[in-house]
Image (cartoon, rainbow, N blue to C red; front, side, top):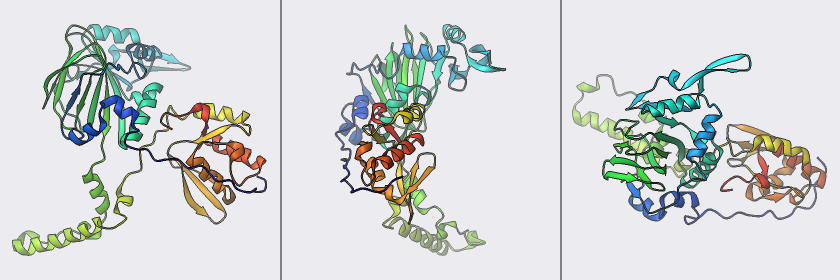
Amino acid sequence: MGQAKAPKTPATSRPLTRTQLPALARLLGDTAMFAEQHWGVTPLHIGETEDTFSDVFSLAALEQWLAASPRRPTVRMVADGVNVDPSRYCKPTRLGPDTFADVVSLDRVVDCLNDGATLVAQSLHRVCAPVAEYAEVLERELSHRVQVNAYLTPPSATGLRPHNDGHDVVVVQLHGSKKWTVDGLGETLLGPGNRLYMPRGTSHSAVTESGHSLHLTIGIHPVTYRQIATRAIAGHAALSKPLPIGYQHLEHAELAAIVETAIAEARNALRRPDVARDALPMPPTRTGLTAHRLQCVVAADHLDAATVLSANRGVYVTSGGPDHVELRRPGGVGLRLPRYTECAVTQLLAASTAIDDLVGLDPESQLVLGTRLLRDGFVHPQRFACPGG
């Protein structure tokens, strides 16, 4: 890299406000009402919206995805709570020199549907770009991890038996209708565009009536106060000690005093001013279909001074050393750069910036830095804008 030039003032970004939550508002409407009355507490049926989420997922998108021969376990089929034998909807397929038995056959899937089985497309947030894009934005707004499945059920059928989930669920009805029985709501019919929110642990079941039904289930894995408290006191010396030998022979009052002392020390650990910093998890980050990694590597061959770059989500600067600065991105990937690039790197993390506007560097160094960051997956060109960025 060349010599430094007079620095420019980097741009700053504004924090996201509660009213700027487009993905959550689209899903649940009045986000303030939902947060105050339903989040983690009571189920909610939203029937007044006509938004069918067709840009996120649809029957046509499901068929297109199945026609591309996905492999298990991204697809499974169930009937009345029992998994269908995979050989009924998969067929041996030759891929190069090898033959695989777990490749899904669209024709066999249709046969199973006609026999009353439900198709489950699992982890669509990992394999379907529009779903991944929406899930990424929603996850960032919620600060809780998100997963997305789709369920296609034939007429007069049920896929899963009555059950409850260990995470919150939002159902989005995409096609047809389905009758749900939900603890706290009773029987609820979902038509296209309707939503159903269920806190974790809510018992529920569903059945189709006269036609096929396709819906998304958006699973939300909430971080709880219990988890934070557990992390905060994990490894605390007082709580890690065993109870005294023969503790069952102690007087109740004496044993209670010993336990209370240990618990009091743990409470003190929770009062530390930095407890939240140490116990709170990092914000969710997703590095899959929306990172444009392959396109970015190719684009690095054609960068010029006017190319506008934006930092990928989850990228941050560590302290580094006296002569270098270190960048990190999700997955633990690190990049060491000369210390004199720190102002330019900080500028990129704050806002999208043209290469020739990077502060503290001459034109040659600006181009070298931009190319390095792009090829190593820390930034992307603005034309590959990530949702919510």
